[in-house]
Image 1 (cartoon, rainbow, N blue to C red):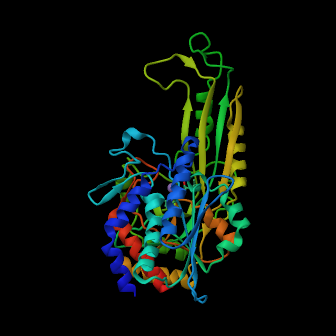
Image 2 (cartoon, rainbow, N blue to C red):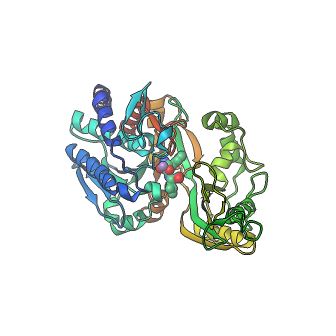
Image 3 (cartoon, helix red, strand yellow):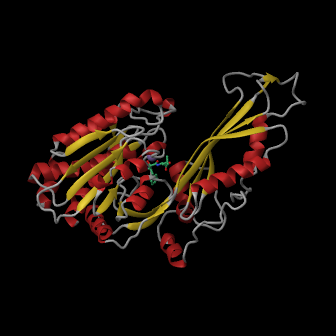
Length: 453
Ligand code: BES
Ligand code: MN
């Protein structure tokens, strides 16, 4: 049966690719209110697609963007049930001018699909859908019961999903959860992720004046908010990259010697960071390796910073306000609310006189660690080895997937984190891409995982 299903997937690769391109053409940017109709369209597209395959599928309302829920179960109730999670929303595509192709006119070039959402996450969860399609169309059945939960708010922090899952707990009864929303090491080296970082963020506004004023007439007599914000922000880290916010590192989980040794065996380091990002040098907290910093150490970053006049030419003003978007990546045992409080307190304390500082849009999600002991993880490891040719690396990832924490507290089932993308896929950046080979290997890995389960 396995060979026939894999063969079916190979024979239908062109059709499976066409379907992904159609899905990618829908600009489902969850962060932008004027895209709300497109977000809904993507949910409708996916649920119609799942229904065509013979699943019971529906678009379910939440307090925000809708959830696509679907299920297939055969008559054998002894089969395990796998809940497959994905997100159909995508990051904003801006700045458009840096794209070589249009982000929502998917283009296949040199073996890569270029489009916003190609890797993160439409290509990855559609690979699971196509695995299910291959079973059902080749054999009329699946070796497991399958449920899909594909949400539309992951890229904005899944603010409504925990509540939604809690309210529909019976729908999500399962033996394990499968999430493909991360990366392989390479096409021949799979990765099973055992930890994800959390996130704590907010926006800050610094105001010194009632309105922008002439920088000649008033300059020298009033505080400049851009300068004040720069001072405040500069106080949060030392020159070496250590965060100086009092208490920031207090709850951070320390790595054991075994874990450090295991992370050290992964051949990923400074050279790879430089090559993938074009960074002029590697910069980070002293005393930790690249892999440790990415997975096991918290960060504090400025994601956006603006004030005054930034258009063409010059404008001699002192701006009234300055703004920044701040997020911290968190590691296990850090509490997002506490971190937000600590950072905001430090910012208030660093503010020079004559400055009004206000915070808004605070939000957070804790980090998570998943247990690697479950038989479902071993099934995923065997499937990955068969699909990619090598046993997986076990890694801590730097990104966040908020639902993982919700699943852990609400379902308490094993969670398999097996990524199908590549590190160079430019997720959240211009020219996001997904290798056609990654899509096809992802379909194969998913088919094999269901067989192994
Ligand atoms: N797919 C990413 C998470 C990810 C990135 C996992 C890199 C592993 C490696 C996901 O779509 C994502 O971007 N999540 C956001 C969540 C945030 C908005 C709460 C993130 O990490 O910024
Ligand atoms: Mn993302």
